[in-house]
Image (cartoon, rainbow, N blue to C red; front, side, top):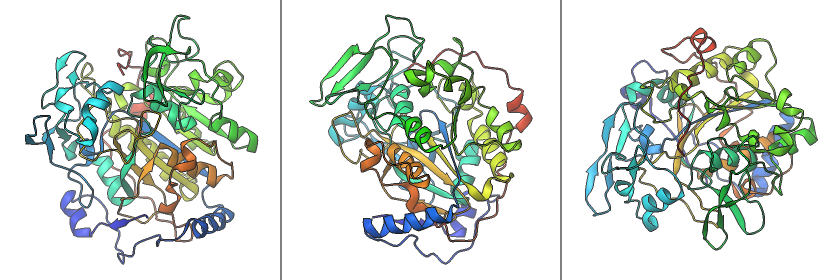
Length: 455
């Protein structure tokens, strides 16, 4: 059942005086209804063809508590539990942070059989004991664009990553709904070389988790994949739905060789769509919006400086400004009244979160909570959604919006984010999101040439 809570304007104003807050009746939308009724209503909404574009903006490595611990009305926490049982306050810290372990092993340690008290047993920067470091939340003044978006649109506080793993599998989950390569094994963690696709060195392997829960390090296939169920690309191509994957340049010294999920899909990386549907650099989305060439479905992958990834080597994180720039470009364009924008973070990044995963499956998940923002003129403004979502929820929404059918992976079990939309309401007018960086800043930003992602 979905529970949506409208934030009172007083609470919003207390959080940020400069943020807009829409007046409302406090009515919960949508009302509880059966799956059959929901399907019928969704079909009716699709006939209205209000949503013609879906844009998925993917950021990096943050738990829900890390970004929204103190957000009014959200299920956040300001204290956490150490493995000793000691309860400690979460420390308010800057957005730029140190890298914390966030592979499958770290997930199991942090999770500790559901007690969510093993984060202090992890490591930072590769081998230093983490101690209380993961027990922190970001100073809200440093992520004002995210909080403003949450205040003006929808913040979902029970969105779980598909697997308790790092960025490689997370990005695969966001195009395929899962990483099962056969009936008994799924990919987990990162490939063995610092290139996560078909151009990796021939000796590159992946790791697996079996349906029996066995972890098989380095025993998986070369990362040039053909999933049994295919990817969203297959469904969209079959229905003539246009799509692009906006990502950093695919060169050795950038994160383009890591976070580009389709680089590991054989039919795309070694086919004509690599030139037509993989759009680099990622700032091309800004020019495509301006020129009227936004595809029906988009993934937007950041450069490392703009990603929220907590590596401290560069000492800067323009992630909030980057997201605001993309949202502002769409919101100020002809596409606003026909677009749904989803912003989420690919994994928990090792940061503390108090909410245990909703369930455990045979593919290493669910993983931990990550933040999700849903921005559209057809959502109920200023709400916190407590519905349980996962990465398959976004894929299911795309499938429903464009009548694609189903991959039959996690999209089949997931609750669609479609229940956040009222496609019969008068569209919410767009109000630009304040940002410390201009559009020109990102258009002229050189590739950062940073060290590659550790997990």
